[in-house]
Length: 379
Image 1 (cartoon, rainbow, N blue to C red):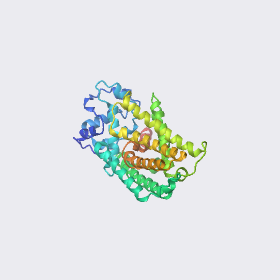
Image 2 (image 1 turned 30 degrees about the vertical axis):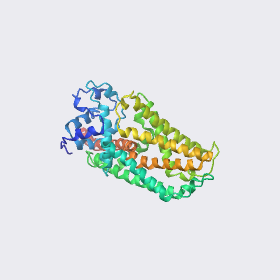
Image 3 (image 1 turned 90 degrees about the horizontal axis):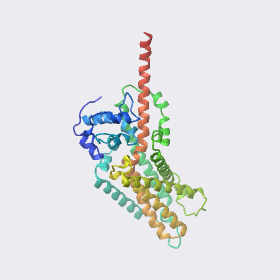
Image 4 (image 1 turned 120 degrees about the vertical axis):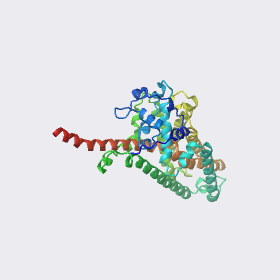
């Protein structure tokens, strides 16, 4: 394991959030109050010490920042205002950028100009593609699939899904190489990977540790937002033929209510995030980066523009439907190509993976040490 000191690490991390760990004098108060702390891992003090002395490789090999759900108790009770919870948030942003094989994630987090420029560039790409491939604009009545041929849109969605999947796969492999290939202290047999694999869907779907926080409202809001986001992604990629249609379904048709729920969940969940960051009445909303604002704002714009397409189509306003659809399409790739995988929603994948990798490492260590302990006992 490398112990090479990176003297610029602390300065680098300050670009990813409000980091004030220099104020920490290792009193242990945060470790005493944090439920994640164990005898083996004095959380979050362990990462703070690594950061203070610049042990970059050790931090890259750590899963600790991903285990934190930012309840904020450590920061609220810190006598030196070292903000240990915000340090974990900054570390998560930094790790997301380190996992990114393209290097674009670092630019997204550290340059507001680059982030806005990337969104504007994506907007130009979308408008250019629509200008090149859109069909006739029927003005007597709404024909959305004539204006936006479903086979072209669906093909674009599939290309987008494959591109995002490949991008995330490479990032996940880098995460695996840091944590397991370089960070595991023992060789891990395939059987342990298989027996611990249940952690991935379980943690992804339930966010169990988040639900165990004393204040469960952030967990509930997050679950509502995540469910709406997942449903919207499924609608776009898997069920587009059902949802982008010129048919007018009756009010109680499930097609309409699935769409309504997805939109309402996105607006509510993202709206609560924006409201919390504006009020700054909780520790987790005390400090915000541009990436913290962009994601919920774009989600609301995506949901509202989708609802406008639906409303204009049902009341028979052709031009309004087409223009609203163009605006709606601008937000889809902006979220899925720029703000999403490089920024905020990447933690939906990295956090369950970190919990899984940690469980695998612990099981492998126990499996290797158990025979040695038994042998000593027999002697």
